[in-house]
Structures are given as structure tokens and as C-alpha cells.
Length: 540
Ligand code: SAH
Image 1: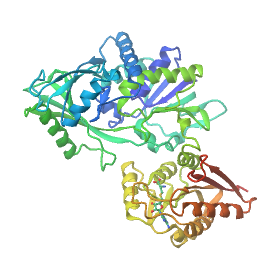
Image 2: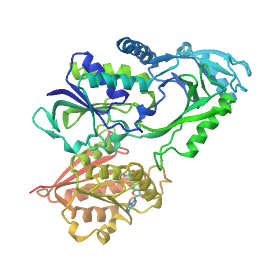
Image 3: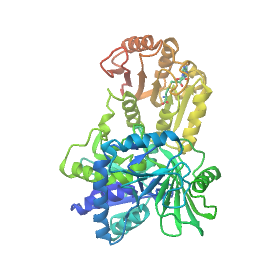
Image 4: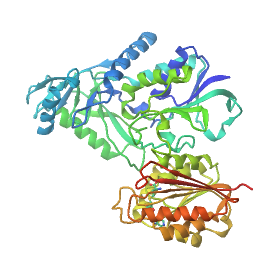
């Protein structure tokens, strides 16, 4: 019997496995599918406490950084090699406002240990393009993530704690206190599966927001910098004569194959920063960062099963924050210590995030091969969730009346490999019975209504009470016994209040011996609080 089965050997899974094993939990197994686009395989491991054009200090960096440095030292002693390379960073000004911002920050004692001296144009201590001047950043460096993954990987292999394999959550079965997967039994399952969590039904309902990023490795006969240099993009000297250049940032992408425009963006940045034309591209890597919508990591146990948990969503600051969170999470797992509120996934409760709760309920009611309906496609996040839960042999019928919604959803589904099982239907949901075959009556497991306007649009097109009522009435005919219809409505916009009143009246008219109805008012201010309705057709 394993104590911990960990999915994913990125930086999060590696450090967590290491920490658990060091603390005496010897029976750990890490499963990894060795995806070349996993963020940790691509990441340059840059550690930079003060970032962005506005030179903002990372929250809690005063805590994270010393913990990280001493943690990597400990690992260095254990593995007898170097993981953390402390290196100053030359920050080049691009605009006058950055200079002004620097001066302001320099006066702020909070920043004093991170900001060094300014240099005038032409005065940087290496031949970079400093035509606007710049300043030296302190307490910067990088973690050699690939070496760390390699060393911990070997350690795991030697301790019989590594398995190279994909992990399909649908093949896990549960008994009272343990799970079994293939020939393994384990007491606790931890997902450190990076951006692929978006299509893994267990935690896909959480508000992830992955971002694609590229890093080039360059080799130059002319010049290898001594410092890290940044003007927004960064150049990081690694083993001579190589340096890395990064990073691009995209919310949307067509392909994970390295793209010419990204390569050009990074080459241009390198040339702009260094004035060196002699570099050749030795490697071009593309990865998906597991960033989250609220920018905080996801830690905690699954609300329906405390023996499944998540340790994910560290985004591009993982090298800096993981040593702290690994110890924090281990304390939670072994000693039941409380998790910090800002990273605990219980922050997505019905009051703070009715949409997330609605998504969790939907995921819970879906099995592979099921059929689901998204009556309000919008930007496609719910359609993507439904599609991931039903899998490639299931089906999702998704409705919207705006081209923009169909385009965004198509993009999102394609990006995460879930396009096949979805029908994108440009039609008002009040007409759904015109296109849904008769045979689908009483077969659909989950129906979603997320009312209101398309997020990010001009907000002019909204759902309306009369058509919403027709659609909800029709939709219920498709529900299978035990299936659920989840409705989230908002009173804040024009007509929103009327619509919610109509949903309420609708819910009260349903025969209560056939439909279980639950209503949550998500907040205390009734004028603005969204409402979540759950309709469940009795299993009979
Ligand atoms: N679930 C979405 C958000 C939905 S926003 C997400 O996760 O992003 C509501 C959507 O309903 C809008 O895109 C709007 O165009 C659409 N809509 C408005 N009236 C509609 C109708 N009669 N039939 C179907 N969709 C409609």
C-alpha cells in the first residue's frame, strides 16, 4: 500500500515527493507521462522578486526567497551539485516612466534589499543596449530546473518511486479508505499535473488559466553575458557559451509546435538587449504554464473525497514559491496543519464563486461517454469542462447566438484537444428542440445555463427571461433520471433581476416529487448577489 500516489513529476511533484520521503513517508510513487510541453521541462527557473514595467515586488517574497535559497542549498548538499545560481540582474529602462518608478521604489524601504544602483546610458558593466540607462536588481538568480528534475527523478527511480506512464483518472477505483489504480493501492492521491489539469475531470472545475510560453537556447561565438539582463524580455546566461531568452506569453494558441513568430520575437529581444547578431538558436521549447485566474496556487483536498488533493497552479513563480509551499503542504498532509486561505481551494465556495461550485457539481455528475448540454456557450469554459468530463466518446451540445462565442469556444476546445466530441450550435437555446434528436430525451446527464452576457464582450447581448424560461422547460425533457441542470444567474445587469425572479417561479412550479431543487444566494447584498440553482431529476 502506497502512502502517496503523486501525478506529475514537474517541479511541484518532484519537490513534494522529496519532502514527503525525507519526512519518513517512504511509500511514495510519482507517475509522469514525460510530456515535452510540461512547464517545468521548458522553464528557465528565473527568480526575480521585482517584475513588470511597474517594478512590483512579488507578494510575500521576503518570506519565499530565503526559504527557497536555503531549500535549494539543502538539496544541493543532498545531491552534491548546484541547483540555485545567484546572479545579479541588469534591468534596462525602456521608458522614462520606468526610471521615475525606479526612483520612487528606491525611496521605499520595502524595496531596499532588492534594488541596487542605477546606471546612466552607456555605463552598464557589460556591453548591453543600455541607451536609456538602467539599474541593478539584487537577490535574483535562477534554479536549474532540468537538473533538479533529473536528480530527483533518479532518486525516485532508485527508491522504486517512479513510474513513466500516463494517468487517466477514469481508471481509478475507490474503496472505503484507499484507491486502486492498475496494480497499485494508495491512501492518498495528489495531482501535480500542471496545465493538463484543465482536462482532468477531478479538478478541471477550478478556475485555471494556462498560458503558453516559449524559451530559446542560444549559442553565440561573440558574446555570453555575465549577468541576467532584462528589459521585459530576459536573457539568462547558463552554461557557456549558451544563454536562454524568454519568454513569450499567450492565452491562446493553435499548436504546441514551436512557431516562427515566437522564435522571431525572442531573437529580436536578444538582439535588442545584447546588440549581438552572432547567436544561433540551439533549442526552441514551448510549454504551458499552469497559471490560475486569480494568480494564486491551488492547494487542498477535493471537497467530495479528502483522500484526493491538488498541489498545482504555481505558474511562472514556482521556482521561488514552491519550496515554501511544499513544506506548507506537507505539514498539512502529515500534521493536518491549516492551509493558508489565499491558496486553499476552499476559497471557491458558493459565496465567492458560484460558477466554480456549479462547475464542480457538473463534473461530479458526468461519466465518460455521457451526454451534456451547454445552453450558454459564452467563451467556452463550461463547454470545455463538459467535454473533458465526457471524453472523446461522449457528446456535448453547446448553444449560443453570437459568432464571437462560437469562435472563442472553438479555439479553446481545439487548444486543449477536446473539439471532437462537441457540437457548436449557433441557435437560441429556446429553439434547442429543433436540433436535438428526439432520441436524446431522458439521456442527458448535465445541462448548464450560465445566464447574462458574454464576459469580455460589449455586454449588449444578454439572455432574457422569456426565452430562458422556454429553454429551461425544453431542456428538462432531455435530462436522464439522476441528471442535473445547473443555472447561474446575475441580478446586476438590465433584466437580470426579472430573469432570476422567473427562474425562481419556474423552480417553484416543478413537481417536487420529481425534481429536487436547491437554490443558493451567493452573497448578502441581494441586489448584486448571483444565484445558483440546482435541478435534479429524481433517479426513480
Ligand atoms: N458559460 C459561459 C458564459 C455564458 S455568458 C462561459 O463559461 O464563458 C452567456 C451567453 O449566453 C452569452 O455568450 C450570450 O451570447 C448567450 N446567449 C444569449 N441569449 C442566448 C440564447 N437565446 N440562446 C443561447 N445563448 C444565448
